[in-house]
Amino acid sequence: MTEKVTVEKVVDDKWPEVPFQILLYDGSWFSPLEPDPKLITIENLSFALARIPRWSGHTYAMYSVAQHSVMVASYVIPSLELPALLHDAHECLSGFGNIPVPVKQRFPRIQEIEQGIDLAVCEAFGTSIDLMYDDDVKKADMRALATEFRDLINTEDMPVLTEKGITPFKERIRPAKEEHARTLFERRLVYALPE
Image 1 (cartoon, rainbow, N blue to C red):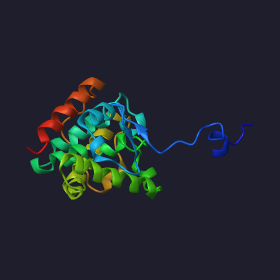
Image 2: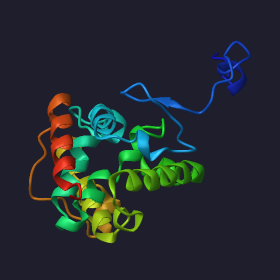
Image 3: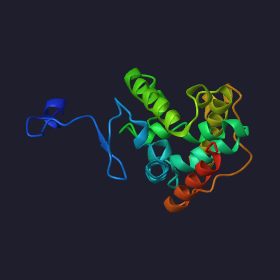
Image 4: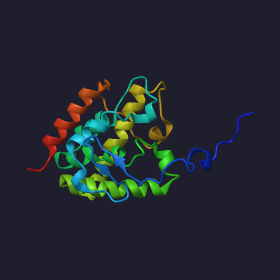
């Protein structure tokens, strides 16, 4: 019989009290609860997003949030390209990674933290939260999800998407290696930045 693990057994008095911060690629400490836009850089985002898997890693090949973000940005009008590219940036700044929507829906505090980070990301790159949450960005994100489901998951259909009439993009996904995904994201972000 296995023993039930409680929070007290995982985090006990042997662990020092630490602030809710994560260490970024460039060595900066970032607080998800008090996000500082000055710490949100192209380098930090591209490095981390290229290493974070979509679908909690349950795809036939590694497929990163960076590559997903580039796909979403490829299917919106030019004025929405930057916010579409940044729509999942919170995933590398929250400490939570890529959390599936059904899990997020049950934990509103996660969504609140991510929205605070989204505001800081928008400030850092000169875009707005309204554009990041625009219906066309969400539609491209959902179509990317359907495309990932078709190309990267071992099943034919995701009923919740089909029922809503969300169809995959015609283009097939070819998962990029980490360095290539990072470069794709960096180049696209630099291109999309306001002058």
